[in-house]
Length: 447
Image 1 (cartoon, rainbow, N blue to C red):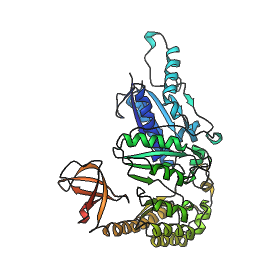
Image 2 (tube, rainbow, N blue to C red):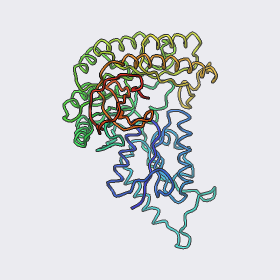
Image 3 (cartoon, rainbow, N blue to C red):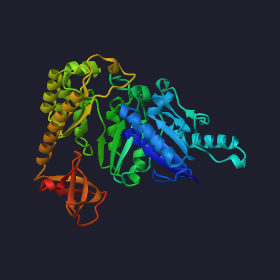
Image 4 (tube, one colour):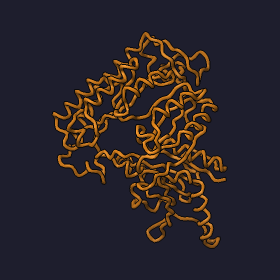
């Protein structure tokens, strides 16, 4: 059977889908090999969240073609979904979003069509196409903006051996002014609760102790089916074998008194919450079409702190959004300081063709974006260090995940419920076990 190499770009949802495609191919007898020379088929799951993501997607596709000019090169996902017109001669098959579940069928149909068009034996050698000899690209791309179907993919195992990411939702209805993703992923589509629970039970049976719920806009889970994210969490909590439930990125509006109080009463719930912020300035938030104010956001953080002891709150912030003045940036920075995040992921605004923000006036110069980014990153480092220093002298439950060499000694390393990476000197094999670790020094807190 042919050798397949897969490469993933982008978010955890993309990573999930790549692993699901791999599992589908393995079930049909394909041999999965590393992404290097020698594969018969290369599958790149692309990303389009930024211009840099587009560029990386193109680079990986061309790299695959160079590694084996005779191979079948397949471009999947968001980049080719959003920009099908940019498909060039290095690609044989384009698979858009909501068609990854059909990867085996699409591949088999392509190979059948190629065999039927084969040249005489002496001319059979495939060559790298030039302007006069371009490939006939096979496209499997739905009109993603007009489908209500959730793409059913499933995993029984993942690349990580202790923690499993589970995709429960796709699409987004928010249309933030800087974001292309609704155009690449379509409207909100939720996975059935039964489908999620079947996968969670399978993963638990295979030894996974922690599940992470992910989606393109996780907070919207169930708005199209009459379900809610809270009800899904409650159902997963009842699955035997699962010891931890972690949530992917959330919109602040989902944090209500009922939501916070209910999940705080679940022993398996991890007190680690990533709440997208993007700016701490109300004027900037309005231009971004973020649909909440900084005051509302702060109230949500305080709700979580009301019901959880010292939860790890993390966020994303964009600097240099069009029209962001020095005063607006100062407001945003002051707000980040006030909230006291464990981690702040800082992104310099990147103009995205096809979005409202791309044509806004007063685009911020790159050097200003860099200065503002550096300021926020330094603030984030201080906040992270303070949060971690407070753990010294405490005992934390850690899910052990791997063995590493740290300062010349063997350590077992894993994460607390708050997703702080902790190590302890190895004395025995405790991989995939939950153990209590006394944190005696900064040396045990790893990055």
